[in-house]
Length: 217
Image (cartoon, rainbow, N blue to C red; front, side, top):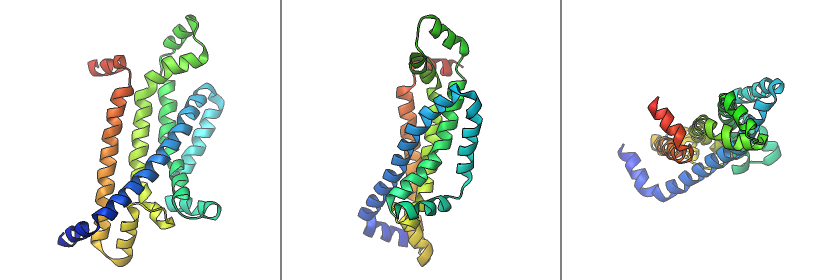
């Protein structure tokens, strides 16, 4: 423990830089995953026949070993943050896509019929009815993806992506426990912190009526 405290006192500025790198890689991947998976999940609810095939393909992608996916992009993108972000993006898609698809499908069909009856277009029904009601489920998928990716981002160190995984990688190679601890503890703290902040965001964006209904239940 003393060696870790000494390491921390000597390298805290570098640790801040590594933490920022780690957060940057993870959150950019989640943002890209959200921008792709939410519209795709909505689209899949409108094309019942192809939904199972696409979700199955995404499920298969999720089972690929993380290091294999990282290594796959090296011949095309080289090493560094870009291939790490793209690989993590693939891993962020499944939980967000699955929750979006489930949330939109779970909307009461009578509400959609009511919206159609008062003259809402298909886009207005998605924007004003389906998305607000499905938002808690979608946010749960985003939170899950964010926590997972903060952990998986440690593997970016193996392809020069930086982040806290550098410390873990060095610690394993040199048999230095303080390096491993210096990489692992901030990752745990980041995961807890991001999950908490996203829960606060969820509280802001979920319509008040839905929160009141959930609390009453």
